[in-house]
Image (cartoon, rainbow, N blue to C red; front, side, top):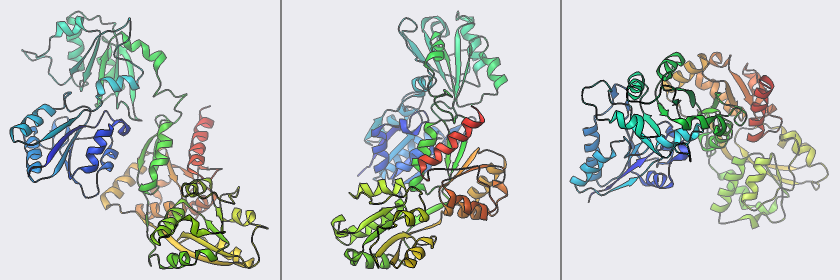
Length: 512
């Protein structure tokens, strides 16, 4: 039995512009054959066991010839596998999806076309340029910029393009820009027609150069603009002045800033999303991975077995909440098993996680650290209180020790452990090189573990010495000091939102 092939458009660059149907195809794929994507996070929606085959094409360098790619899709489908052919933009807009589909049809392989959002309309939109606009442009054309305009028999109707279409969008045309502009002007398009070159459209790195048809080639050379970029010609470019939104510094104050996120991969997205919403370009390099306790869950399970004996449960992290309730459910119990036990939470994020399980914390201290819990619990514990503390395997002892000094019996049950994330040697070396070269404006540290593990991954602190750092709170900042690192900013509220606010405030002070 043959498998099936999905020809999926990955969109223009922003991974969130992948369609729902494209995401659903990735989630069931056995094999993903993919091009040079603008954002590899798209691949994260595939299963862990998925086979990934890179067949990307860059200028003058093709990993695999198109004919071989076509045959690869056939061969993998004949193995009975579900194959996703993932390519930037739309498969049928200069994506050669038609060629791939024809060979699949010839071989009796069922296929599905999943259109993608083409850069021809989305990239101008992110630059605040509509390709059509009433009374300005009622037609537009999408043109390949790869064709050599100097060849004797061009496949393009330059006379028709120059004067018969309001808006022209050239894809992949930066290298040929001098000849493209020359041909358009020769065929009647005025040299003073507004134009724009947009690089890395829809990505945080997006750059927009507003120019004219006659000046575009020279301006691009002066600015050093390289592919990937599109070239748009027409009076609609004037609308950018009022419709600019994505790269407006007033709306996105972190534009142009590159930030390294060291949080665990399963949790990094929230921080990345917050920073990217403000215009930052983020790279996720997890320094930690969340794993089960080294000796398993026996201690936590034993505590859950006598859960009704505790007066207080104290949760110090979102991970502690998640793993505790996972084990509670594994034991065939739910929140009713907590009985009359009261609950304390360190941090608003931990309290929010508890609410997902139907628990409203009785105590959320103003200071999101162990000392704050001690202060908040004053007068609230019965004599000889029995307390359960599900937390990380390695954590500060100040909280349980202080509670015991006050006469409480405290069971510390490891619910999870943080270990150094797996990072191949070549990736560590590349990261150290990028840091040393000043590629990143900020590094975020969301826990002491992220500090210690990143230093261990790099082997020393020298690559970090000239990079600004953001700590989620004073405990993390103290760990940085112990590792000879200075914290540029420390969040006043020890949450992800507090960390983002601190970074934003730093730049607003620098550039009021």
